[in-house]
Image 1 (cartoon, rainbow, N blue to C red):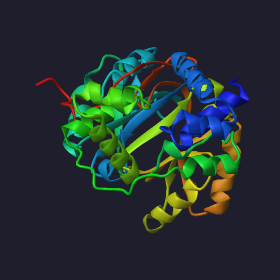
Image 2: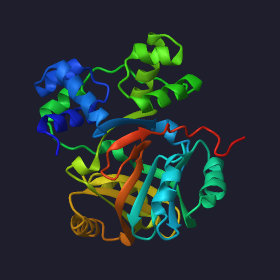
Image 3: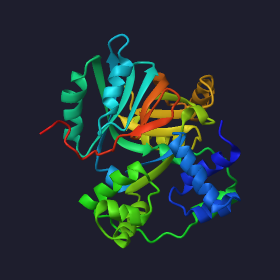
Image 4: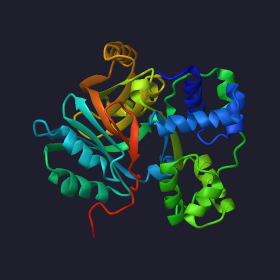
Amino acid sequence: MLSETDLSLVNALQIDPRAPWSLVGETLGIGAATAARRWESLVDEGRAWLSAYPAGPLASRMAVAFVQVDCAPGRALEAGAALAADPHVPTVECVAGPCDLLVHVVGAEFGSVAEYVVHRLSSLPGVARTRTLVSARLFSEGSRWQVRAISPGQQEALATRVRPPAGAPRFDELDRSLLLVLGEDGRLPYAELATRLGTSASTVRRRVEIALASGALRLRCELARSLSPAPVTTMLWLRVPPDRLESTARSLATLPEIRMCAAISGAANLLVVAWLRTPADSTGLEGAMVTKLPWVEIVDRAVTLRTVKLMGALLDETGHARARVPLDFWSPVLPR
């Protein structure tokens, strides 16, 4: 397990991923250099890292699908590794449940998601069958989950850091390149970002601050699941009356265990992902859900056996990050 200081450091960067080390150190009661050194060690060892991805108004214009993949016997990891290499696939999980793999697919438009599923995914060796669930809306996603290792006062000190007023992000080629570079290292200094992108530090700073303040760009601090206080991932496919879908999703999003909640097509119309301490905790979560929301019907469920890729990070069998695949959702699905 991580030390309390390292867990606190992860929690601090979950609240403000680009907070100055001076503020992080002051808030946690350690030196700025110590905070920076410990974070660098966590990243080098793959125990923690930052992901960058489009969110808010930008993500709402994108197409998302969750694909259930059945694989030939013994070929799930092979197929999962091939899918994980693709920039349109942010997350791949081997699961025990209604399928062998659950694959998240994202494209700049619906046509690119359809092209990926029809032409790329279905042709992979080892893939036997696929079932595609198109997401009409993402109600909540993983950036809200925290390890809860610091006090409310420390959280407030980090959350109230002065930010510029939100503007309208252009999201041109510079912004796209910026997102991809931040996906490699979300804490790169503005001067280094400017050098990588061939522009000025002031331009980069302005673009990053506007993208973060407007919610178009999200930076997320991740922790290796084997080191997390909630190492078990479970998925629930729910059937909810259409007129109660939004209120149900908002109610579920208030539960601290919930990692993601998305409206989907199919017999079930809501997909919920939760992070739990043990597989047995899923029984308590399900009981609490149906007690609070008696109109909810659980259609199916699954438990993650191994996460192959999480928001662009390629993970080993212990959940440590070993490599990155840029989340370039705008790139061509197939070679032109």
